[in-house]
Picture 1 (cartoon, rainbow, N blue to C red):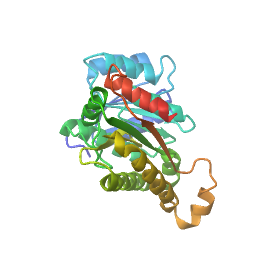
Picture 2: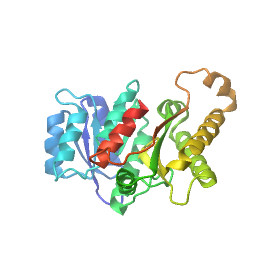
Picture 3: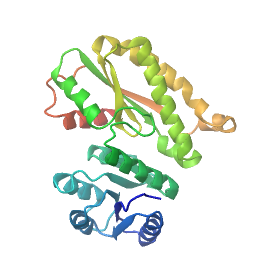
Picture 4: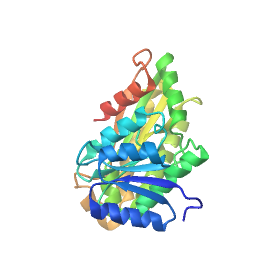
Length: 284
């Protein structure tokens, strides 16, 4: 249970889901405001000053993306962490949400315990001023932005985006504890590989929940990318229970690795946000 009455805003037009989530978080000790329309969500956020907002993407008037845009543009609400609710089949929702500055996302139908943990993690990051991902321990947020800004300004730096594909599908089958184990293992393998090939000033952080961004000396990029691709790809089957491995290897939504490189970013982008959007676009 929360130690203080932290405030949560829920914007959800499915009345059954809204009622369930509201009752659950109130029972956990949070102060909860619930609305069913996007416009009402914007107004409630401006008036109530919540510590966190949970936004459904599909709303009857403006969608959750537009709600997020308006919140991010308003200095009164720009700092509010946002967790998007997305439909299972709509992978593009995640990418668009990340581009808008969402702190996390969760797919429907969702595990209420997973939602609780993701709310807790987001609130802890804000209250503690943490700049590290609570699962992997890697830098995120402002620390990543600082390194990306350096890549825009300096020669000799390359970027590599390493994406862990289909983690949502894995989580839906095996649970959020198992999916977090996968994320942690990936972060360790990437760090170990960078230790073998990279330089002491090379950087690894989170661009999204399952996206890692590497900023490195350009000379290290080819060898590092080749070894990472081999090591990460070979590890994938071992995350599945033995009884499921053969079947999982045939599934179109099995865990996967995708890499997108940017040999140079110097002078190409007017802002860090533009650079991040381009990296996510390359992933598609």
